[in-house]
Image (tube, rainbow, N blue to C red):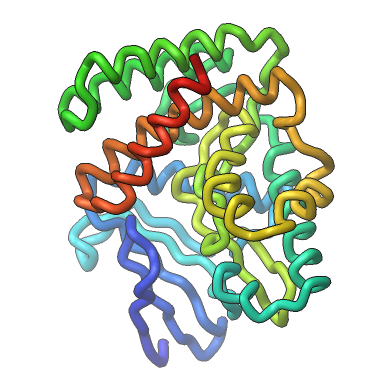
Length: 291
């Protein structure tokens, strides 16, 4: 090693760029707490699966369940790729470059979603493997009920109708929902641009085996609604829109409801008032639309 620099972006880890003479720059991620071992094991497996199927992402080079130097916290090393995150990079892109970026982004996500592990699961390390999407949704609903009880974000008279709406929408989906590897945090800062072109997806910490429509929630909220023309180009690269059918729309209702209720707890417990208010507004809009 010739030097180490802290990387300020990222929330769930301490991250550093490590400069070396033999292998170039590396990315070191150290979990903030030892109890994050399960999540780090899942991330380890996700990165291995993504590499096996050719999903564009930084290569995993080493994983450790913990060592004394890091207070027993798990850590991993990935290759460090030069570039800008997509949110920064698209500002300087001309129209054709921006269109190519979103098409390539869509192709990368399609490759991710093509990975069928044969089961649904909330993570790839320790969560139960579910044979059906409905059982995955039901388990998530029960965990949300408990997390909301502890965080006291919504009163019970508001929470229960939202949970009932999710369950009823899920049961209205009659088409088979196959498991896909999903990222669950797809927005522009989690893409990398090098020399004006899309290079890869970043930050797979929240990935799991679920319905592919799950990934279109944040894409729509934070990308398609903010960047004119991005949705059409992304879908061109993806190979169409899974939300275009009535069944796809129902699946999106479920995914959006789950994200909003999960986000309310997260933004409340982390003290991010602006995001909490945004999710409260979105939930108020989602409830009558989903009734």
